[in-house]
Length: 265
Image (cartoon, rainbow, N blue to C red; front, side, top):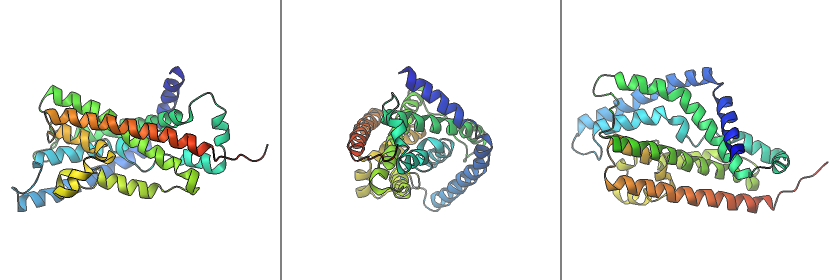
């Protein structure tokens, strides 16, 4: 365990070095957040009684989505892992006294938290002082805030295990298919449109998939759209898919390593 904690710390500190890139990305996130809120505002004003979420809930959803974009993005991660597999340098990783899957998982988690740390505080600070109706509101209760934090951590772990599967696919394709993984994940996780806005028959199916256990769950819990016993069910869903993806990823890695052939001295 100490080795993995040390790995997390080193990777986190490494990710914290890219402050200029984070500040450059903030302008894009603010612009995207305001654009989404203004677009939804126009729809709400046109027909305010025909939406599954209150406008204040949608605003909170959007600002939190921008603040924690680095935690939930399924793109922009794993390029070094894919290169290790393609180049054959994975042979060096196999010689190290660490479980390879858990090592990749720790590295990716640390990178996500480092990037999120650099970006989330400025976004939240501005979102909380904006005038109504664009202001980010606090959760309705301490219980709701606690469930949000737990769900946020679980959702990050779920999307990270999903990203590792993208890297493992390189064993079979010898090229990254990250774009395909990212498009599916972002849409079905509510990154483009929150899941409550999906048509009812599609939403019922999507809410049972692992994508619903990613950003969809913590953002809806914070905004107050998911409350009461539904919060317990949501966290249980996240734990279920985290176990499935983690075990599935470890099984796929073991199976893939049986196909690895290292040539040369």
